[in-house]
Every structure is written in C-alpha cells, then in structure tokens.
Image 1 (tube, rainbow, N blue to C red):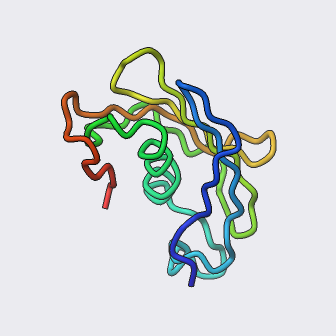
Image 2: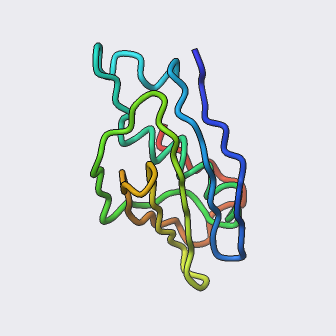
Length: 126
C-alpha cells in the first residue's frame, strides 16, 4: 500500500509552488473510504498534498491555525492525475490552494498559519 504522494515541483516562484502527481491505486488513504467507490478524503487532500507543499515552499510559516473557504467540489479517485498549486500573497501567514484534475477544479481554499510559529513546526492535521 502506498503511503504518500510523489510531489515533485514542476514550477516554483517566490510566491507559489505547482506540482503534478498521479493518485496511486493502492494509496493508504483509500482504505475503507469507501469500499467499491474509493474517494480521497478532504483531510487527506489538505494534509498529504497541500500542507506538504507549504512545508517545501514556505517553511517559515508556523503551525496550521485554521482553514477557510474550503470547497471539495469534485471527488478525487485512484488513477487521477492532479495539479496542485499553493500560493502566498505578500508576507501574510496564509496560503490559497487549488487541486485540479485537468481543467476540473476538485478542491480549493485558504489555510491560515500561526504567526511566529517555530520554524519547521509540524503543519499536519494528523
């Protein structure tokens, strides 16, 4: 069973990071969610995709404080090829994200981080 995503950056700027990833058929997040119709849970999308990229591109941000405007618009299934974009405007302790399958927007939202967090502090929802 695959435990994580391959998140190799395809584009990186001072204010954003973009990655492409293939959703493995045997991803551990699909175990029991749901039998016969596997769907990637929202918490897995944020934790395993978005927060991982935040840690790679914006390691100076503290721990996750809150989520806002989160929309899970389309299901993500085994075999999907995803484009994940995380952006930060100015020096605000917040990022916006989009997860797309082709041109279809699957998920998007905004994550807010603690100001003055400890560098390298865990940003996970787990």
